[in-house]
Image (tube, rainbow, N blue to C red; front, side):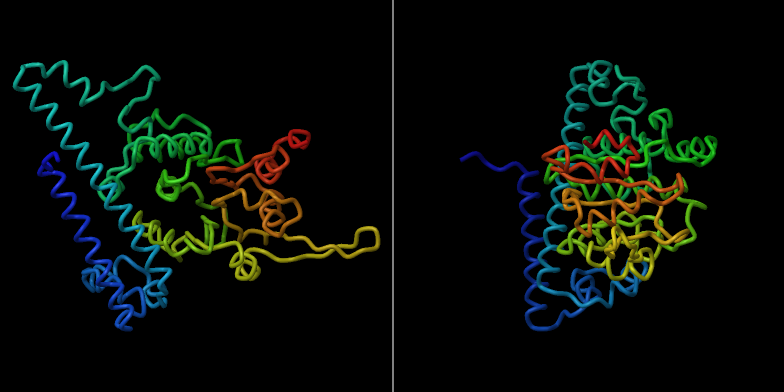
Length: 357
Protein backbone atom coordinates (compact mmCIF):
# COMPACT_ATOMS: atom_id res chain seq x y z
CA UNK A 1 0.00 0.00 0.00
CA UNK A 2 1.35 3.39 -1.02
CA UNK A 3 2.27 5.71 1.81
CA UNK A 4 0.01 8.73 2.23
CA UNK A 5 1.52 12.11 1.41
CA UNK A 6 1.59 14.86 4.06
CA UNK A 7 -1.17 16.63 2.15
CA UNK A 8 -3.37 13.51 2.13
CA UNK A 9 -2.80 13.03 5.85
CA UNK A 10 -3.75 16.65 6.50
CA UNK A 11 -6.93 16.24 4.43
CA UNK A 12 -7.83 13.09 6.35
CA UNK A 13 -7.34 14.94 9.62
CA UNK A 14 -9.61 17.76 8.43
CA UNK A 15 -12.36 15.30 7.48
CA UNK A 16 -12.08 13.49 10.80
CA UNK A 17 -12.31 16.80 12.68
CA UNK A 18 -15.47 17.74 10.78
CA UNK A 19 -16.99 14.30 11.40
CA UNK A 20 -16.23 14.65 15.10
CA UNK A 21 -17.85 18.10 15.15
CA UNK A 22 -21.00 16.83 13.40
CA UNK A 23 -21.23 13.89 15.82
CA UNK A 24 -20.85 16.26 18.77
CA UNK A 25 -23.66 18.50 17.49
CA UNK A 26 -25.88 15.45 16.82
CA UNK A 27 -25.26 14.17 20.34
CA UNK A 28 -26.09 17.55 21.88
CA UNK A 29 -29.29 17.65 19.82
CA UNK A 30 -30.26 14.16 21.04
CA UNK A 31 -29.83 15.28 24.66
CA UNK A 32 -31.94 18.41 23.93
CA UNK A 33 -28.97 20.69 24.51
CA UNK A 34 -29.54 22.16 21.03
CA UNK A 35 -32.92 23.59 20.11
CA UNK A 36 -32.28 26.58 17.83
CA UNK A 37 -29.81 27.51 15.11
CA UNK A 38 -28.09 29.83 17.58
CA UNK A 39 -27.32 26.73 19.67
CA UNK A 40 -25.95 24.96 16.59
CA UNK A 41 -23.61 27.79 15.61
CA UNK A 42 -22.42 28.22 19.21
CA UNK A 43 -21.75 24.47 19.50
CA UNK A 44 -19.84 24.68 16.22
CA UNK A 45 -17.47 27.11 17.92
CA UNK A 46 -18.57 30.42 16.44
CA UNK A 47 -18.34 33.42 18.77
CA UNK A 48 -21.44 35.24 20.00
CA UNK A 49 -20.30 38.43 18.26
CA UNK A 50 -19.75 36.64 14.92
CA UNK A 51 -23.11 34.86 15.18
CA UNK A 52 -25.02 38.09 15.79
CA UNK A 53 -23.29 39.87 12.91
CA UNK A 54 -23.64 37.02 10.40
CA UNK A 55 -27.17 35.70 10.92
CA UNK A 56 -30.55 37.36 11.33
CA UNK A 57 -32.43 37.11 14.62
CA UNK A 58 -35.25 35.20 12.92
CA UNK A 59 -32.84 32.55 11.63
CA UNK A 60 -31.04 32.24 14.96
CA UNK A 61 -34.23 31.69 16.95
CA UNK A 62 -35.68 29.16 14.51
CA UNK A 63 -36.14 25.65 15.90
CA UNK A 64 -33.90 22.93 14.45
CA UNK A 65 -35.03 19.49 13.30
CA UNK A 66 -32.83 16.44 12.78
CA UNK A 67 -33.47 16.70 9.02
CA UNK A 68 -32.19 20.29 9.16
CA UNK A 69 -29.01 19.12 10.89
CA UNK A 70 -28.39 16.40 8.29
CA UNK A 71 -28.72 18.93 5.48
CA UNK A 72 -26.44 21.34 7.37
CA UNK A 73 -23.78 18.64 7.88
CA UNK A 74 -23.88 17.86 4.17
CA UNK A 75 -23.34 21.54 3.37
CA UNK A 76 -20.35 21.67 5.73
CA UNK A 77 -18.85 18.59 4.05
CA UNK A 78 -19.31 20.09 0.59
CA UNK A 79 -17.70 23.36 1.67
CA UNK A 80 -14.79 21.43 3.17
CA UNK A 81 -14.23 19.47 -0.06
CA UNK A 82 -14.23 22.74 -2.02
CA UNK A 83 -11.53 24.13 0.29
CA UNK A 84 -9.51 20.92 -0.02
CA UNK A 85 -9.66 21.04 -3.83
CA UNK A 86 -8.65 24.71 -3.79
CA UNK A 87 -5.68 23.90 -1.55
CA UNK A 88 -4.61 21.09 -3.88
CA UNK A 89 -4.76 23.42 -6.89
CA UNK A 90 -2.70 26.05 -5.07
CA UNK A 91 -0.15 23.45 -3.99
CA UNK A 92 0.12 22.10 -7.55
CA UNK A 93 0.70 25.62 -8.90
CA UNK A 94 3.42 26.21 -6.30
CA UNK A 95 5.14 22.95 -7.30
CA UNK A 96 5.10 23.97 -10.96
CA UNK A 97 6.60 27.37 -10.15
CA UNK A 98 9.25 25.79 -7.94
CA UNK A 99 10.22 23.31 -10.64
CA UNK A 100 10.37 26.10 -13.18
CA UNK A 101 12.68 28.13 -10.99
CA UNK A 102 15.02 25.18 -10.54
CA UNK A 103 15.19 24.45 -14.24
CA UNK A 104 15.23 28.12 -15.21
CA UNK A 105 12.12 27.70 -17.30
CA UNK A 106 10.10 30.47 -15.67
CA UNK A 107 9.04 32.23 -18.91
CA UNK A 108 7.59 28.97 -20.28
CA UNK A 109 5.96 27.82 -17.06
CA UNK A 110 4.45 31.24 -16.39
CA UNK A 111 2.16 30.73 -19.37
CA UNK A 112 0.77 27.63 -17.64
CA UNK A 113 0.40 29.15 -14.20
CA UNK A 114 -0.38 32.77 -15.06
CA UNK A 115 -2.36 32.94 -18.35
CA UNK A 116 -1.99 35.85 -20.70
CA UNK A 117 -4.48 38.70 -20.49
CA UNK A 118 -6.49 37.36 -23.42
CA UNK A 119 -7.07 33.79 -24.57
CA UNK A 120 -8.24 32.65 -28.00
CA UNK A 121 -11.85 33.60 -27.19
CA UNK A 122 -10.90 37.18 -26.32
CA UNK A 123 -11.70 36.79 -22.65
CA UNK A 124 -9.68 39.15 -20.46
CA UNK A 125 -9.33 37.13 -17.26
CA UNK A 126 -8.87 33.58 -18.43
CA UNK A 127 -8.82 32.11 -14.92
CA UNK A 128 -12.27 33.60 -14.30
CA UNK A 129 -13.66 32.60 -17.72
CA UNK A 130 -14.71 36.17 -18.40
CA UNK A 131 -16.33 36.72 -15.01
CA UNK A 132 -15.27 40.12 -13.61
CA UNK A 133 -13.12 39.82 -10.49
CA UNK A 134 -15.01 40.28 -7.21
CA UNK A 135 -12.34 40.50 -4.44
CA UNK A 136 -14.87 40.75 -1.61
CA UNK A 137 -16.58 37.56 -2.73
CA UNK A 138 -13.36 35.69 -3.51
CA UNK A 139 -12.21 36.13 0.11
CA UNK A 140 -15.01 33.90 1.41
CA UNK A 141 -16.06 31.69 -1.52
CA UNK A 142 -14.20 29.48 -3.98
CA UNK A 143 -15.96 28.89 -7.30
CA UNK A 144 -14.91 26.20 -9.75
CA UNK A 145 -14.23 27.21 -13.35
CA UNK A 146 -17.53 25.76 -14.60
CA UNK A 147 -19.42 27.70 -11.92
CA UNK A 148 -17.69 30.94 -12.95
CA UNK A 149 -18.49 30.21 -16.59
CA UNK A 150 -22.18 29.62 -15.79
CA UNK A 151 -22.42 32.85 -13.76
CA UNK A 152 -20.70 34.82 -16.52
CA UNK A 153 -23.05 33.51 -19.20
CA UNK A 154 -26.11 34.24 -17.03
CA UNK A 155 -24.89 37.81 -16.47
CA UNK A 156 -24.36 38.25 -20.23
CA UNK A 157 -27.98 37.34 -20.89
CA UNK A 158 -29.54 39.33 -18.07
CA UNK A 159 -27.47 42.48 -18.62
CA UNK A 160 -27.53 42.33 -22.41
CA UNK A 161 -23.79 42.68 -23.00
CA UNK A 162 -20.57 40.67 -22.72
CA UNK A 163 -19.42 41.22 -19.13
CA UNK A 164 -15.89 40.02 -19.93
CA UNK A 165 -15.18 43.56 -21.17
CA UNK A 166 -15.05 44.48 -17.47
CA UNK A 167 -12.07 43.31 -15.44
CA UNK A 168 -13.66 43.91 -12.04
CA UNK A 169 -17.15 44.07 -10.56
CA UNK A 170 -16.60 47.80 -10.00
CA UNK A 171 -16.08 48.25 -13.74
CA UNK A 172 -19.16 46.11 -14.35
CA UNK A 173 -21.27 48.39 -12.16
CA UNK A 174 -19.98 51.48 -13.99
CA UNK A 175 -20.75 49.89 -17.37
CA UNK A 176 -24.26 48.91 -16.22
CA UNK A 177 -24.96 52.48 -15.06
CA UNK A 178 -23.50 53.86 -18.30
CA UNK A 179 -26.04 51.76 -20.22
CA UNK A 180 -28.93 53.28 -18.26
CA UNK A 181 -29.12 50.65 -15.49
CA UNK A 182 -31.36 48.53 -17.69
CA UNK A 183 -31.20 44.79 -18.26
CA UNK A 184 -31.09 43.03 -21.60
CA UNK A 185 -33.99 42.03 -23.82
CA UNK A 186 -34.09 38.47 -22.48
CA UNK A 187 -36.77 38.30 -19.78
CA UNK A 188 -36.14 34.64 -18.97
CA UNK A 189 -33.00 32.48 -18.97
CA UNK A 190 -32.15 28.85 -18.21
CA UNK A 191 -29.27 27.88 -15.93
CA UNK A 192 -28.67 24.29 -16.97
CA UNK A 193 -26.18 22.35 -14.86
CA UNK A 194 -25.78 18.72 -13.85
CA UNK A 195 -26.65 17.36 -10.42
CA UNK A 196 -23.85 17.86 -7.91
CA UNK A 197 -22.23 20.82 -9.67
CA UNK A 198 -23.28 23.33 -7.01
CA UNK A 199 -26.16 25.15 -8.68
CA UNK A 200 -27.04 26.89 -5.41
CA UNK A 201 -23.53 28.43 -5.33
CA UNK A 202 -23.90 29.54 -8.95
CA UNK A 203 -27.23 31.22 -8.26
CA UNK A 204 -25.97 32.85 -5.06
CA UNK A 205 -22.96 34.22 -6.95
CA UNK A 206 -25.24 35.49 -9.74
CA UNK A 207 -27.48 37.29 -7.24
CA UNK A 208 -24.42 38.72 -5.45
CA UNK A 209 -23.14 40.27 -8.70
CA UNK A 210 -26.58 41.64 -9.60
CA UNK A 211 -27.07 42.99 -6.10
CA UNK A 212 -23.69 44.75 -6.14
CA UNK A 213 -24.30 46.57 -9.43
CA UNK A 214 -27.81 47.65 -8.38
CA UNK A 215 -29.66 45.56 -10.95
CA UNK A 216 -33.04 45.88 -9.20
CA UNK A 217 -32.76 49.53 -8.11
CA UNK A 218 -36.00 51.48 -8.68
CA UNK A 219 -37.67 48.48 -10.32
CA UNK A 220 -40.01 47.59 -7.42
CA UNK A 221 -41.29 49.18 -4.22
CA UNK A 222 -41.51 45.78 -2.56
CA UNK A 223 -39.03 44.68 0.12
CA UNK A 224 -38.07 41.50 -1.77
CA UNK A 225 -36.12 42.05 -4.98
CA UNK A 226 -34.83 38.49 -5.49
CA UNK A 227 -37.23 35.61 -4.83
CA UNK A 228 -35.70 32.11 -4.89
CA UNK A 229 -38.20 29.22 -4.97
CA UNK A 230 -36.84 25.75 -4.22
CA UNK A 231 -37.81 22.41 -2.64
CA UNK A 232 -39.06 22.54 0.95
CA UNK A 233 -36.38 20.05 2.05
CA UNK A 234 -33.49 22.39 1.18
CA UNK A 235 -34.92 25.84 1.97
CA UNK A 236 -32.86 26.23 5.17
CA UNK A 237 -29.73 24.83 3.52
CA UNK A 238 -30.13 27.30 0.65
CA UNK A 239 -30.60 30.20 3.06
CA UNK A 240 -27.33 29.30 4.77
CA UNK A 241 -25.47 29.18 1.45
CA UNK A 242 -26.89 32.58 0.55
CA UNK A 243 -25.85 33.93 3.97
CA UNK A 244 -22.29 32.79 3.24
CA UNK A 245 -22.40 35.07 0.19
CA UNK A 246 -23.65 37.93 2.36
CA UNK A 247 -27.22 37.55 1.06
CA UNK A 248 -29.53 37.37 4.05
CA UNK A 249 -33.26 37.09 4.53
CA UNK A 250 -35.11 40.40 4.92
CA UNK A 251 -32.37 42.22 3.01
CA UNK A 252 -33.93 42.11 -0.43
CA UNK A 253 -33.58 38.33 -0.79
CA UNK A 254 -36.16 35.69 0.08
CA UNK A 255 -35.84 31.88 -0.14
CA UNK A 256 -38.97 29.74 0.17
CA UNK A 257 -40.79 26.75 -1.31
CA UNK A 258 -43.76 26.78 -3.67
CA UNK A 259 -46.27 26.08 -0.88
CA UNK A 260 -44.98 29.04 1.10
CA UNK A 261 -45.26 31.13 -2.05
CA UNK A 262 -48.93 30.18 -2.35
CA UNK A 263 -49.75 31.00 1.26
CA UNK A 264 -47.38 33.76 2.38
CA UNK A 265 -47.07 35.08 -1.15
CA UNK A 266 -50.83 35.45 -1.22
CA UNK A 267 -50.38 38.25 1.28
CA UNK A 268 -47.24 39.83 -0.13
CA UNK A 269 -47.08 39.28 -3.89
CA UNK A 270 -49.92 37.10 -5.17
CA UNK A 271 -53.68 37.02 -5.15
CA UNK A 272 -56.11 34.47 -6.52
CA UNK A 273 -58.68 35.98 -8.87
CA UNK A 274 -61.78 34.54 -10.52
CA UNK A 275 -63.56 35.09 -13.80
CA UNK A 276 -66.54 33.60 -15.64
CA UNK A 277 -65.78 31.64 -18.81
CA UNK A 278 -68.69 30.03 -20.71
CA UNK A 279 -70.84 30.32 -17.63
CA UNK A 280 -68.31 28.66 -15.32
CA UNK A 281 -66.20 30.28 -12.64
CA UNK A 282 -62.49 29.86 -13.21
CA UNK A 283 -59.65 30.88 -10.91
CA UNK A 284 -56.28 32.31 -11.83
CA UNK A 285 -53.27 33.85 -10.09
CA UNK A 286 -52.16 37.46 -10.39
CA UNK A 287 -49.02 39.17 -9.09
CA UNK A 288 -49.70 42.37 -7.19
CA UNK A 289 -48.64 45.56 -8.94
CA UNK A 290 -45.47 47.40 -7.91
CA UNK A 291 -44.54 45.06 -5.01
CA UNK A 292 -43.54 42.01 -7.04
CA UNK A 293 -39.92 40.77 -6.98
CA UNK A 294 -37.72 41.86 -9.87
CA UNK A 295 -35.89 38.54 -10.31
CA UNK A 296 -37.75 35.26 -9.80
CA UNK A 297 -35.35 32.30 -9.47
CA UNK A 298 -37.00 28.91 -9.90
CA UNK A 299 -34.97 25.92 -8.70
CA UNK A 300 -35.84 22.45 -10.07
CA UNK A 301 -37.96 24.19 -12.69
CA UNK A 302 -39.22 20.87 -14.08
CA UNK A 303 -41.78 21.12 -11.26
CA UNK A 304 -43.78 23.60 -13.38
CA UNK A 305 -43.92 21.44 -16.51
CA UNK A 306 -47.50 20.26 -15.92
CA UNK A 307 -49.93 22.60 -17.63
CA UNK A 308 -52.73 23.65 -15.31
CA UNK A 309 -50.87 22.98 -12.06
CA UNK A 310 -50.83 25.74 -9.45
CA UNK A 311 -47.04 26.02 -9.74
CA UNK A 312 -47.26 26.45 -13.51
CA UNK A 313 -50.05 29.03 -13.25
CA UNK A 314 -48.13 31.12 -10.70
CA UNK A 315 -44.92 31.13 -12.75
CA UNK A 316 -46.72 31.90 -16.01
CA UNK A 317 -48.61 34.73 -14.28
CA UNK A 318 -45.24 36.35 -13.53
CA UNK A 319 -44.82 36.85 -17.27
CA UNK A 320 -48.08 38.82 -17.34
CA UNK A 321 -46.63 41.68 -15.31
CA UNK A 322 -46.84 44.72 -17.58
CA UNK A 323 -43.29 45.94 -17.26
CA UNK A 324 -39.88 45.23 -18.76
CA UNK A 325 -38.29 45.16 -15.31
CA UNK A 326 -38.98 41.54 -14.32
CA UNK A 327 -36.77 38.53 -15.03
CA UNK A 328 -37.10 34.79 -14.47
CA UNK A 329 -34.17 32.40 -14.00
CA UNK A 330 -35.05 28.74 -14.51
CA UNK A 331 -32.62 26.34 -12.82
CA UNK A 332 -32.38 22.58 -13.33
CA UNK A 333 -30.28 19.61 -14.41
CA UNK A 334 -33.25 18.16 -16.34
CA UNK A 335 -35.64 21.02 -17.18
CA UNK A 336 -37.70 19.41 -19.94
CA UNK A 337 -38.05 16.01 -21.59
CA UNK A 338 -40.67 17.11 -24.13
CA UNK A 339 -41.19 20.35 -26.02
CA UNK A 340 -44.61 20.86 -24.43
CA UNK A 341 -43.02 20.84 -20.96
CA UNK A 342 -41.13 24.03 -21.82
CA UNK A 343 -44.27 26.17 -22.00
CA UNK A 344 -43.69 28.07 -18.73
CA UNK A 345 -40.09 28.77 -19.73
CA UNK A 346 -41.09 29.99 -23.21
CA UNK A 347 -43.86 32.23 -21.84
CA UNK A 348 -41.55 33.81 -19.27
CA UNK A 349 -38.97 34.41 -21.99
CA UNK A 350 -41.69 36.26 -23.90
CA UNK A 351 -41.14 34.17 -27.02
CA UNK A 352 -43.67 33.90 -29.81
CA UNK A 353 -46.61 31.62 -29.02
CA UNK A 354 -46.00 29.29 -31.97
CA UNK A 355 -42.59 28.45 -30.51
CA UNK A 356 -44.23 26.22 -27.92
CA UNK A 357 -46.50 24.26 -30.27
